[in-house]
Image (cartoon, rainbow, N blue to C red; front, side, top):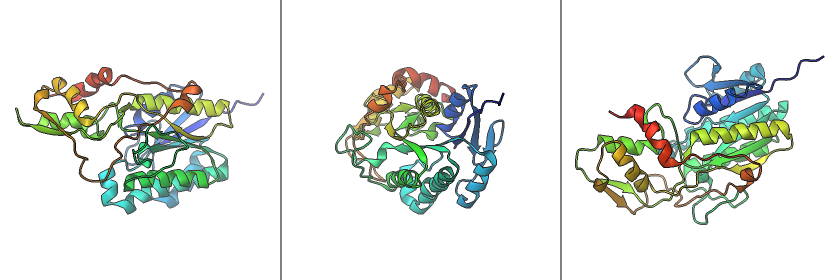
Length: 304
């Protein structure tokens, strides 16, 4: 009797903000073999890979021969992308194209992580098929990555997600928890301006990891599964409103926070890029963690 095939799942960026919970979520599926890539770190279940060296990607993938590649690794900081669009394109598009081309030649499936920043924020909520119009270099790079995947001819799914938060190694690892860092570093009694212009939908990385594991399982059970999908938290908040929730947790006075109605400096951002998630919900895929319930445990290891 032949030995049953054990699906091999490869996660790029497995030591990142999303990659860490995704590696754990997939590793809980005992019927899968799971490997992660890391830029610097090595360890059990991790392989070192510099994705900026695109010529080395095909050989790396030939050696591991994954069935499904979940591509989370990316430059995800809009202001960094604005300052270094070439470097961002190299990582966000070049590596993605190399992975997709390998997958097309070998019959592997790719799940590519994209962003709500492919939209301009003028007409929410956005369905997967709605017209894209990125406002900054980061959003353009993620859209170009989508095109690289879909044009390579491989079987693939794209998952667009919004602002992410979760268990962080440093408070500045997430654009959500960095707000708590700013409150903790402020002088006592100082007035702190917080952006109150863009509506965000902070989404827990553990929820996105659960969605990605669900998409992977669905693909293994239904080989025709592919396309563009959205996942998002459903609590609308500005950064000022998030900071008001953080303040008592970090010993700051919420009265010191000043709502700033102006668009943020730096790379232009969409004002409201709310994502419609109904396609995944119809498949029974999805999980949402309440923001206020999650934040205390996330901040606790970093409080002085």
